[in-house]
Length: 172
Image 1: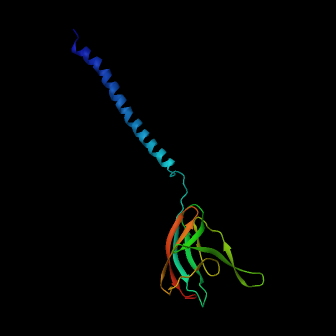
Image 2 (image 1 turned 180 degrees about the vertical axis):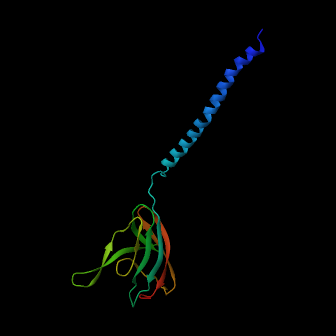
Image 3 (image 1 turned 30 degrees about the vertical axis):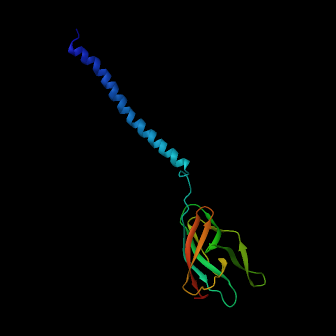
């Protein structure tokens, strides 16, 4: 016959072993869940991806002068992210528009040079103007001062940014 004291001493080590295993299991499971979440986040491209924050504001498009239908649009673009980006295309109401830069020729005449893209450096901005970079496009019938025109600016890293520009008279 076993004494009550002897049975208690046999059950006590097993209970301690079970309690220890359960106490060790909780952090192991928590680490496994965290590792699984980080693996999924990295696999989806979240870890180490550069931040590109592009803001487009102050859009304006000039009303064409005379009989011409070609005009220019201007935007202020800021990149508050920590990675450089590049403006690679622009559309106006679904129609392609071009990027250009106004330059002076050696003879002193103004000329327009077509551009494939425009850099927008991290932590900096680009303020388009008639004396620098602009968007060239064909004006649509019915444009008058105050009309809002939809543009999509397409960046290499950021992707598409939809914005509006107001039709204004040149020099206004």
